[in-house]
Length: 140
Image (cartoon, rainbow, N blue to C red; front, side, top):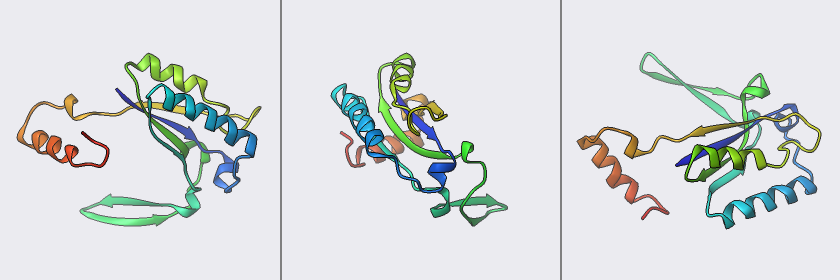
């Protein structure tokens, strides 16, 4: 089962404040534990929304809206993509994350399971998606 653990942004992460070295060290240790357990697929911090954009779709057209975006608590500052055997294991890993914005600072991690092709009913479209997935880097 694959899960996305998303660190919610705060005013500091949205201002582009980089984590201090002690937090980077704690995160590196945590990431090493994920790797050792064979659970980490990917993970990274994100630049502030001022460097991002949203693409809105309406009436068959797409429109680009440049950042920054309001309400940092609704934005994502970083993520981990993990693969574990159960939701419970994913929750255990999420609870072990070092304080994402530093010790003593409020933070929130949202945990969401990813849909996988096996979750969909068989169809020619899903078979084609399986074939495409096999060609992705890192897939067997």
